[in-house]
Length: 395
Ligand SMILES: Nc1nc2c(ncn2[C@@H]2O[C@H](COP(=O)(O)OP(=O)(O)OP(=O)(O)O)[C@@H](O)[C@H]2O)c(=O)[nH]1
Ligand SMILES: [Zn+2]
Image 1: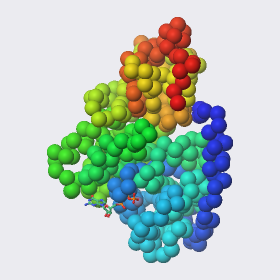
Image 2 (image 1 turned 90 degrees about the horizontal axis):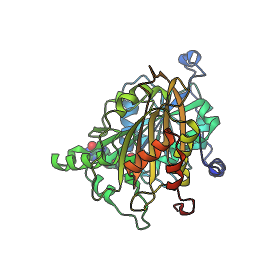
Image 3 (image 1 turned 90 degrees about the vertical axis):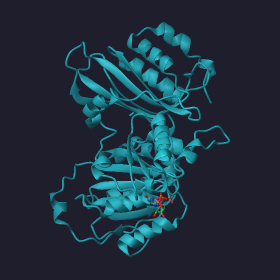
Image 4 (image 1 turned 120 degrees about the vertical axis):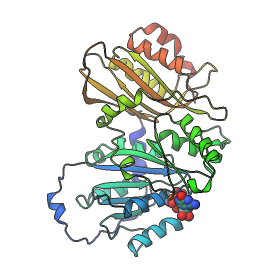
């Protein structure tokens, strides 16, 4: 795991902020508990989406569907009370709110008002009582920050892993939210959530015409060329499409290879600042240079496009060939965090060795990104150093 210096401390500080003490569950001992493998890691799926898009509806749906999983739910409220969340707890458990609840089907439910980290740590003390975690963020949350939590916290990483990010989009208001301009020139929350998603659920399709739905679908695709788009009413989707995705680990290596070959070049969209860029460069990458390449993009943020705008990468994904490594390496990035991990898949022969990268973000210029990458792979420092202007680091 690579992270810019300072983040770990910041996370630490955040974790210090108060979180309600969680009430232990007096649950009956389960037979499965004895049989369950204590070393097995628990998947966490983040459910995000703009206010009212249908996140809680999705949670409710998952909790009531047959899936043979004992799901623990964490509602991340960031201090904003919500009647809807209350109704979830009540309708499912018929009891208290803001505490741990054991639902009738054995699922656990919790509501927290901090960044969720402490809640998950506490939850892990109930290990063996559940085998899946769903975390709903608030509508205005940046899911990247929540996702980063699982990467930064090494201790947590022993017990759980990030399985995927689901973004629920409201059919009726989705386009409006995506087009919203923020006064400070920042990327709006709705776009950020779509950019980060592994799965995008276009929900409430009952409320719009086929024409409007097409527009929304096209816009979403133009932002995120990699994520899977599903359409739903009442957030009812096939659960095999949203759970156990392994979107962030090397297990996704095999499927990722196929997927990366079919990422559509996203059409330029006038009012859309976030795009997906993908390119392929055959050959080997030198690990050190690859780190420099990624760090310049994610940390130094000193890579600019032709208009001299800074490139902002929100999500990065790829399969690369590292010199002297027999196995394919998966690259994952969310905001400033990234990771290189060997997959179980080996390169068959040297002619096959190649690097495929997908970047989702703002002001991205495919040619410049590719040229920089070629400079890395070919280990020619010249073009490289002339292109980074140390004194022109973006804010
Ligand atoms: N017409 C229609 N309404 C829906 C659909 N799905 C959800 N709703 C309604 O939309 C409202 C918001 O749904 P929630 O699931 O609470 O949305 P949320 O994203 O959790 O909302 P916040 O947590 O407040 O941001 C509720 O009144 C739902 O009943 C749908 O497919 N069609
Ligand atoms: Zn909700």
